[in-house]
Image (cartoon, rainbow, N blue to C red; front, side, top):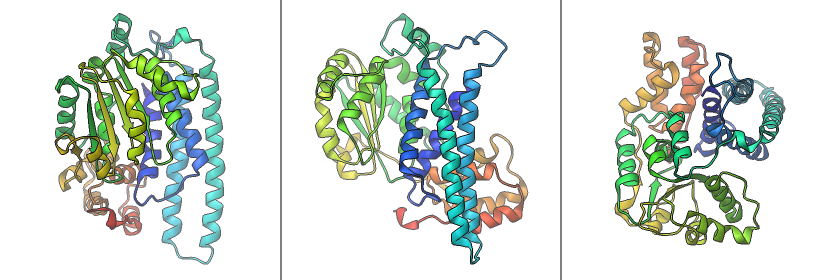
Length: 384
C-alpha cells in the first residue's frame, strides 16, 4: 500500500531527527506532536481500511491524497536539512540572516502541510465504523484480516540474526508472561528491530492483540493507558483516567497479547503500569526499548536482554547502498566518496538511513558528494 508506505517513511525521518544524537536540524515541538498524532491516526486507519477500489483498476483518491501529502511533508523536511548543510558550509556575513529566513520558511511550509494532512484526518474520521475493521481479537474475521494485510518492510540490514532470535523468544519462549528489553544507545536501531518483530507475520498470527506505544521522556501514564486500550479494542477509549487501568486489565485478561513500549526512560513508568498487564501462562509478551541499561536490568535478568551492536563495515555499506540506489548497482565514480560518507556515520543505522535518504535525492556528481562529505559531522562521543 503506497499510502501506508509513505506514512511510514515520513514517521521514520521524524524519528531519525528526534532520536539522533546530533541531528542536522531541530523541529518545532508542537509541530512534531501534531504531525506524529495525525500520521499515527492515518496509519492505524489504513491498516484496516477496506478500499472501495480494491477490485478496480482505478486508484483510491483518498489513498492518493494521503500519499501525496506525506511525500510533501518529507520533501519539506529533507529540503530544509540540505539547505542547512549548505548554509553552514559557506562562510558569508549574511549567514545568520539567511539561516533565520530559511527557518521561518521551513516552519510555514511544514505548517501548511500539517494543515493539509489534518484535513484528510478529519475526513477519515467521518468514515463510518463499518468501513473500518480494527479489531485484532482472534476469530475468523481477524484471521481474514491478517491473511490479507500488507507486510511492512523495514531495512533490517545487519539485524537479521537478532530479529530471528527475538521472534523465537516471542512466539516459542516460555509460557508465562515475559518482558524483553531491547537496549542500546540512541540511533542504534532499537525501534527498527522492534518494528521488524511487531509487523512480522509470525507475531500477527501468534498474538490475539498487538499494541504499540511510545513512552519518551515526557510521558503521561493516563494517555499511555488510553493509547494502549484504544489500539487493543479498536476504538477510542473515552473512559476516565482513573478507570483506564482496570478496564485494560480486564480486556487483556485471557488474551495472548504483545505490547511494545518504545523509548522508555524511567523505571517509574513501568512501576506504574505493570499492574495493568495480566500474567497468564499464555505466552504474552512485552517488549521495552530503552537506552538506559539500569532500567533494562530492573525489568528482567541479563539473560533476557537484547543488546544491539553497531553495524560493521559491510552491513553499513549495504544499508547505505540500498537506501540510496535500491537494487541498482552503486555508480563506480561515487563508491570511494560514498564509503567516506558511510564511515562518518560510525555504524549507526539511523545516521546511515538519514544520510542515505538525502543522497538518494541529491545530484549524482562527485563534486556534490564531496561537498556533503566535507560538511557532514556526527558527534563521535556517542560511539562507545
